[in-house]
Length: 96
Image 1 (spheres, rainbow, N blue to C red):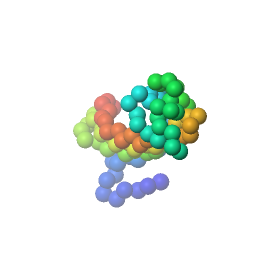
Image 2 (cartoon, rainbow, N blue to C red):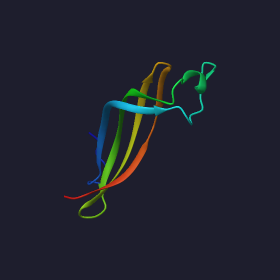
Image 3 (cartoon, helix red, strand yellow):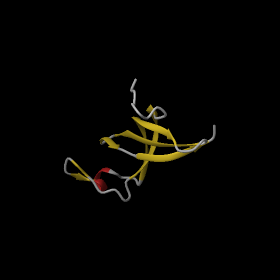
Image 4 (cartoon, rainbow, N blue to C red):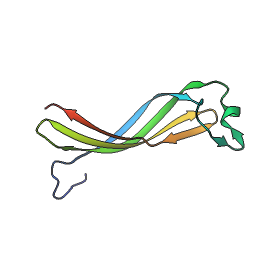
């Protein structure tokens, strides 16, 4: 458990997820072991299994408004190997 001195209302949390990702190779340019994306992707889009993990922090800015920042690492599995990306989310929640 982390303890933040001077910021008692800061709430860290962890994330873990499993699911499916719709992957489109149409505008993606890449090379894997000498093969280009056009050679590897015979179709424009596929659905791939993915898993993710990360964390975030939430803090109050008003009585019913809390802001959050999340960072996670998402990996999807393809026949050609694994591909990962790191989305950074910033948002707000409203309510009690």
